[in-house]
Amino acid sequence: MPRPPDQLRALVEDYLADLRLTPELGGLAEPVQHALGGKRIRPVLCLATSDALGLDVDGALPAAAAIELVHSFSLVHDDLPALDDDRERRGGPSVWAAYGEAAGVLAGDALLAEAFRLALTYPTGDVARELIGATLKMIGGQWLDLQGDGNREDLHRLKTGALFQASIVCALAAGDVPHDEREPWREFAAELGLLFQIVDDLLDGDGYVLDVGEDGARRLADEAAERAHTRLAAIDADTDVLAEIVDELATRTG
Amino acid sequence: MPRPPDQLRALVEDYLADLRLTPELGGLAEPVQHALGGKRIRPVLCLATSDALGLDVDGALPAAAAIELVHSFSLVHDDLPALDDDRERRGGPSVWAAYGEAAGVLAGDALLAEAFRLALTYPTGDVARELIGATLKMIGGQWLDLQGDGNREDLHRLKTGALFQASIVCALAAGDVPHDEREPWREFAAELGLLFQIVDDLLDGDGYVLDVGEDGARRLADEAAERAHTRLAAIDADTDVLAEIVDELATRTG
Image (cartoon, rainbow over all chains, first blue to last red; front, side, top):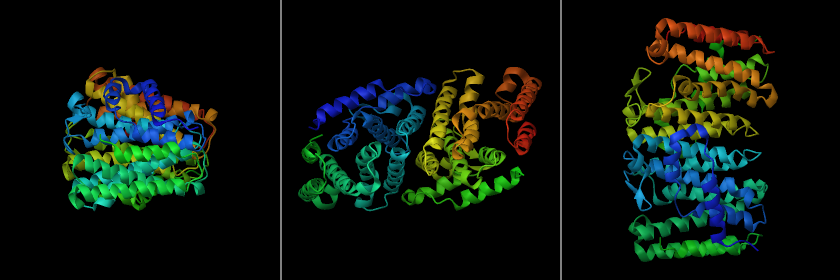
């Protein structure tokens, strides 16, 4: 019987609270820890995928945490004055607003590097390979966004979709699921990432809402959720909790 | 017969010139390429180590390039206004001065991520593991330096020594040299990194020169060079070219 999302979230929180950063980071540990708040959507997804397949959920924790660290890295750098210039993040000061711009740059670097240190605790480089592909897409997506180039779909696929996909595929990589069995999961992940992003746009009143209006965006979200359910139903695993996560993402209000 | 440094440098230049960046980086490729100048000291050291052991030098090229990319990543971020605020690098504009601060942040991120993509082209995660340890130390060292904390030795070990060590050990990792045979190489690398840094201080008139004067620093450099030669002589490999590199680093004027 797969564990409910809240139980998985508690596992992630405990793991991150106990995470021992590289000692040589010294005082940079404080801004790094400051950056590690959030809803844990991606790591929970990673653990839920592991659980759905009856894999070792504890064994997926380093991968799940690595994904969360890559997510945090991207937020810390995106918040910098030269990029999105956000002083606030999750109801408090962003890293650079709290600790200065140099800390914002270096804490972001440290988060990315720690993510790969965690991903490389697995015997093979497979988890790290999945994660590096997603990271490069995110960086390219952020650049595209800053340039004001690129269509909505490309932007979302790079900035959000890639790490959502990695959240799921890293669970397979951590559990040594053969590559040729990963494709249906990638397809599910693509729909889930799209769903997440459209709902994000609905909550922020931007992105797809500007393109197709609120009703149009709601319809696109519902369609993505439906496709995610269809993809999931085609996968041979105990996917009840993942289906619950699809519904949670479709109906979330924050 | 090991190849001379110039031949190895040409291999590195060709490999970097042909390097295909992740397509999704899009227009960010230009500032990334802009950052990839330099003397190639670290990648040449990597290839020379591979050659000294009779390993496949071409097979060490992705590792050598990954090291150069990590080095470039650190320079691009260190040059940012919030850190060292350097508008110039290698006789031209630094990345942020040429392309703006956002490009400086994201091109640095892309260089780090591309480095790990290259390091992960090896079947095992061993090269990437060596590299991530060095990267984390460099980030911690840069933070320490900005805080004005830490003694000269710690700063040099973290900011310079770690990547010099990785330059050599990544060649062993790329060639699957067993872990228990790597220690003598690490000891050699530590002396070489120290030598490099003291000579750097002599050329810039800072660091050790401020601590012990020019003559004192010259003496420390000569002692480090001598210890490097002693360490090297104890290693069972064709180390003539590496010995030549020690002398080149000891006597370099730029």
